[in-house]
Structures are given as structure tokens and as C-alpha cells.
Image (cartoon, rainbow, N blue to C red):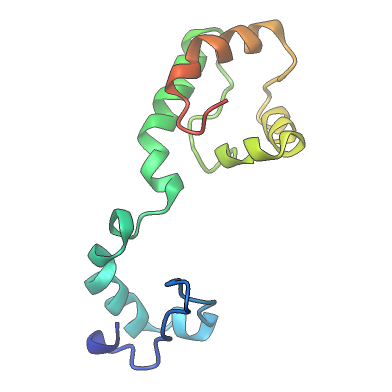
Length: 121
């Protein structure tokens, strides 16, 4: 990053992770240029877990549609798939999308599509 113009980019901590990067630095044009030049060095090319899972999440949503849940969201960002770690958040997000998580149809679809869920069940 520094050799690509982000001279004030922080050093990683003892755990190898970078701390919080200031919004001012992240919003600078040189940060975007440096990040684009260096992202290939990051795990998964700098893609987030959500970006990596997006194609599989779309297939999962299509499976849910095919099994009788047409309102299951196709856009990974519209319902946070990682909210399964917090069941209340997952239930609320599905309800906002018009999916009744307690419906027998939804339960059957989840069981049928479970193999395609990148975040597990």
C-alpha cells in the first residue's frame, strides 16, 4: 500500500491483522488506487465472505423459490445470511422479506435446500 501511494497506511498488529483504518484515509483516492493495486495479496483477493458466497447464496434462494418460498430474497445483502448466528436477527430479517420462518412450507424448503446453504443451518 505504501509503495502505491498510501504512505500513512498502518502496520499490522502482532496478530497480523490491521486495526481500524480511518475513514479519512479510506475515503482518499490514493487509498482506492493502492487497494486495487494490492488486493490480490489479500486472502480471497480482498473479497469479503459475503462476496465469496454470493453465487451460492443466489442458488440457495433459487432452491427456496423452487420449493414453495417465492419471497425468499435473492440479494445476499437484503437479508444478512450471517445473521444465522443470532436467530432473532435472522427471523426478523426473513419476516421483513415476507417469509414466515415458522411456516411448514419454509421448514420443508430449508430442509430440501440445506445442502446449498454456504453458511450452514
